[in-house]
Image (cartoon, rainbow, N blue to C red):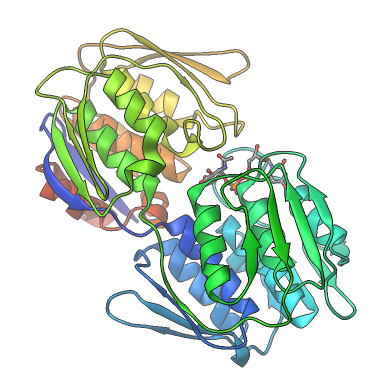
Length: 425
Ligand code: UD1
């Protein structure tokens, strides 16, 4: 099992290119099951989660062709099976989203209930309610969801009980092939939802309103092939901006989308960063200053993303002042706190572990650490970068799920970081 070995104390400086958004690409792979012709998804990041999704499609008999630039061509019409097994769905929640497209296109699907990051219970009730509203018959047996429909799904009105990204995307995809019009209310407005809607429309779907609370889908009889480039990964860009701010450095991120990171940029400016924006690049410069602690509440887009909460906490650990961070999206998403405290940070959990009060300290110290989720793991890398001495981050397979070439990108910014296999330690 690989680990990351970090010698802390370097100031990050330089440029990097934002990777494509994993959370967009994964849903597009599921959406490809709706088409009668091959679709191509470009700018796909080279990540474990992407490989898992490709394995899942291959297990259904779907032909997947990958070129050297990570353009992925998917031929859904070669499908032979309609069951997504536990072994593949358990490692990644996004794979659950093949249920709706399989059902909408082929009238049946059997998909294991999902796993994913260990960040509290992550129900799928909104997904299942939505599919039922469109006329699906749903049965649960032995941890599998079995869905069937006689003929086509039927357009319906669906009011989501909470702002769910995965749920909004799931029902939006299924409704594209339904008979009649579907009205989705209380939708998630994340950029990845908009990216997916653009992709579906290129396939010939009629989806209006993505990016607002209400999405209208006029069902069509079939969907065709298309080619689509996924948007930049805003969480990845945000992670490197925060890492540079924490180390008092400067970074330019090319091929990024500043419009998707407005609140994050606002918080980094509050932390003391000088930020310059163009249409597709973000430049951050701390001018050597120690960051000021920032307070925030995670909430659905366009508010501060839960996926950057742990990283900003790492910055707060060594910032001037006190930052209060409230997590409202997931329970159990403060697993990094204990590890950061072991490194000498001063973080108190309050209000039933939903609020973290971070008292900035002058310096923290390297230690062996690990975490059980993707963003928590990368936050420990940031903590290692600002710590004095050596940090070993264990269980980095979590990081490999979501960060393309993480150590290469950080090395290019001047970080002293390397990957080591356990036996080399
Ligand atoms: C969530 C994040 C997304 C992030 C992704 C990966 C939000 C709103 N969503 O998306 O930004 O990229 O994790 O970490 O920040 N819920 C239900 N029933 C459901 C579905 C969801 O109760 O059927 C609840 C969840 O428990 C959670 C909230 O709704 O509290 C948001 O979940 P959801 O947006 O669906 O999660 P993801 O799609 O995984």
